[in-house]
Length: 410
Image (cartoon, rainbow, N blue to C red; front, side):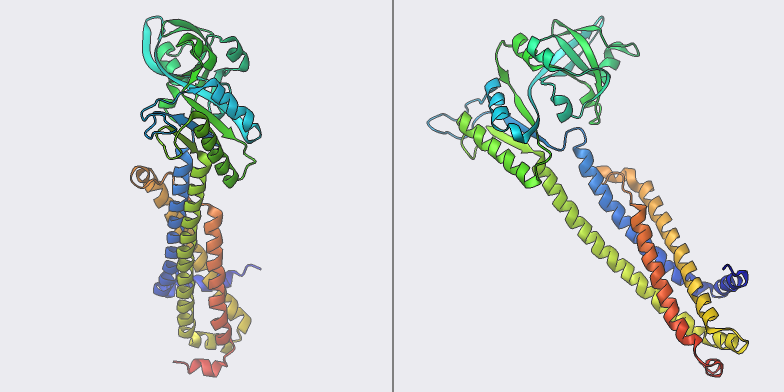
């Protein structure tokens, strides 16, 4: 039940003993402030790693080729490795159960014109699954489909900024544009979380590109999305199997990284997970030490405060106060100071993170540092309970002392 008189006594005690109240509160506030900043920085690093891969699927894998730097099986150094449709189909058929998405890719740079406006853009020839590998968001119309591939249709999906460059505020869907001298129908407009560069790209069917620009079956790159049901280690093993298979098929030396490389997001995800796990262990260790220091600090202060107020407790008992009321008053005062100080520490920590957050990304790779309120509130509750115990034990002992002994206390 709410006792207004007791709360008046508590606030009167706080006003009378400002220094020790401030010292108690500072210990708690500093512990929570440091705890908030540590976890905020850790989360900021996690956000940076997530944002670095934001525009690609987390289960993506790239197979890239270039020129050989080592002789192999009588074949000379400097041999250009060329991927073809049969290589793409071979991987698709052999590892079908491990593949969720798959797309070949051909990279081109073409001038795209509409009426009197023209500019040079990156044009990528892909399969329909590339939408999910690149995490492309369709704003208008549709993406490429299998019918476009089969019929080698002259259709194109353009980025939001290409539309803005060529059409301004006017609609682009259904219009025809000139791509390197050929007319293509715009069937879709997309946006991409990867930024402006990703939105100045256009996509056409891979079969159309092979027919129009070389009349061959060459591809530059094979992109795969491994089955997300695979564990991280299984996905890494899958990537290594693909690499070994392609090296064998293309007669590439096992150690020639320039001729063929497989970039597997599973490997990157594993490294990031290990780094973040180690970082959180360090943060938890340091944060726990901070909380323990706060607990020791508040405990020492409460022992000193109660010893200082022993005479006061003796007078209260002489005037008829029950030991339970004395204990309750001390405990409530301890909890009040701890709660207010914890809130101040949390608020200050959150403010500092929001204030300096934008300046940390470029130099320290910390993006949008923030902290889960539940974690900090949990730490504050631990300190409140500690403050309660720290106040209860010595207060209980002091409240049970006989008034005459308490009044004689130094």
